[in-house]
Length: 332
Image 1 (tube, helix red, strand yellow):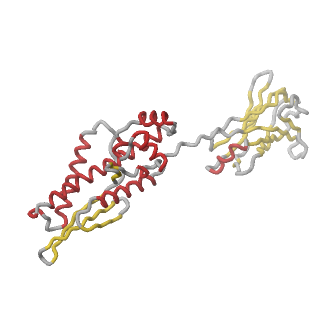
Image 2 (tube, one colour):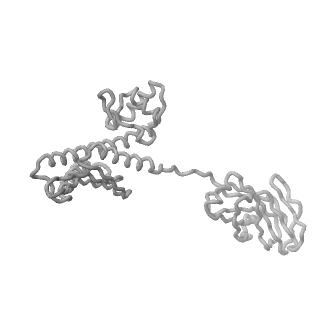
Image 3 (cartoon, helix red, strand yellow):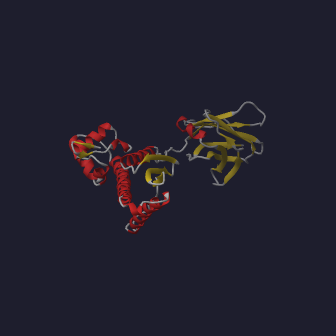
């Protein structure tokens, strides 16, 4: 489109540019076409915006420039191919008698341009096609004498067709640019990975049951200094640990299964010998539940003074290792 003799293109076809930012580009940098935008650098635009009090990130501006380069390249290539086709049609002797002849010439020109571009960019990353159009300029005879022409385009990725009578230029360009713009706007953003902090486990208390079947237990809670009782040597006892999950991390449970288990160790305070008392059965964390218990059904210790340590481990997500100690446990 031309305004006062000046070529203008709709910059809002570029994802991220609305009517306001289009006005910024026109007023601050005299950018009216895709080619105008494609020729500028990120720093030039960002610096000029800053001078004018406009805000746009460098990452955002870079996306605009990449899209503008794509649209400008497609438009230029299309104009060259249409000019070639129109030049061929001006010579009656070369009018195609079959619909494929002229389209083959156009496609050959496109292929030659593609090969040229590939040779000049061997040191760059490989180009990937994101939109492909097959343009045909067709002809047929009417009543054995007159020639009738039409323009046919096939958007391969979307499997869309469009036709115009005669050799169409402006509407063909506009239609192709419209399809490309829609494709760019629908391209998904690359999502940044979501960081989740390690799941936090807080051990609340340890209970010791002796004898095994008793309902009464000796409880040692976080913050206690002395264990309220003694253990009989050689007599089985049970250990039960209670722990909580930090509420912040419960969202992880919707992503995958997370299991837990507890381990118990006793370190003799005089000899330094460490005894592994055993592991609890594996349990599964439940969405919406914050408090859990794990029980070691039976173990024994010989006479002595021990430091008892319990460890809770989670599997399936990053998690902090939770540890809890009873500093002095007497076994008589």
